[in-house]
Length: 392
Image (cartoon, rainbow, N blue to C red):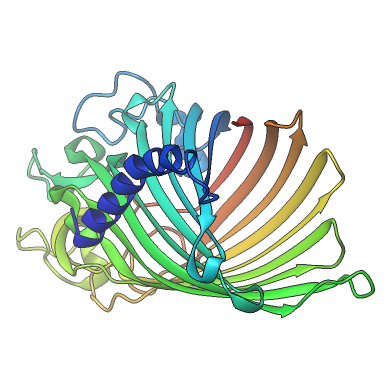
């Protein structure tokens, strides 16, 4: 685990333990601290859990042998039950202004793909500042869980110089994530009765880290992140958020096994004395470093006991590999577009119901040059969810 993972874990653990104790103590004093737990349970239908191209979704099925591309990947679609709990501790902070501490835990239970089950921990601190400002600190971590299978090696069993599907050895990649971020909200315009348009600018910076099991260390990513958001309230019940997010993520340049066409490079990758094998085993340098930019817009309106929100996000990734035989990343660019809608219902003072639908598609700037490795190519994904939340 990385240093940031340990740091996030420590902060989250301390907050989870301390919050109820602090709240219990505060209830017997006049300090004004309040403790409010919230629990929720949700059901989500995801039609592309492993981000597969449409043509490959039908290849999944229970009983795939170990070492095959789709081992432990029983179904492209799944029903995911998510159980979450958070505890808001709110009281007087700097200069007597409100301070909120919110530790939270979330666990995903996959019905058809049990290998994907896993949890997340997070904590956020929000301190109100002068002139409508808000300072926030956030941290989260997710232990390594099964993501999908990637190509680990290839064995030319019949010595014909080419690697067919049965000669490829795949292994499970387990991925974990951690992040830390700080942001500050500046009030640009205060909404009033005569001038209802309110506006604020939120800017932030942080660090993101993704780690894999040792077999796939070349897929680790880490680097700085930055964000800017324009938060507007055109009326007392409506809102518009415009956001820009950026990440510069570095990956270790390492040698990986790949299946390459020797004639494309005029090189004898497998050492059999020829350069005309169309699917030769190669062991060459790979670099998955990339930058990510995302533009998004969200609009919402509160109708009283019902709230409607719609969103759109466009993400662009640019890969920076200069390795000559890294056909999967050298020159790669991809774009993802996502549309979403959410309806929230107030069923009572403490009970909320949320229904959401999200549709996303990703396209590469070229046909996937090395789909045999298991890397993400063009795909589409639809997720629908129903979440019931109770605030104590």
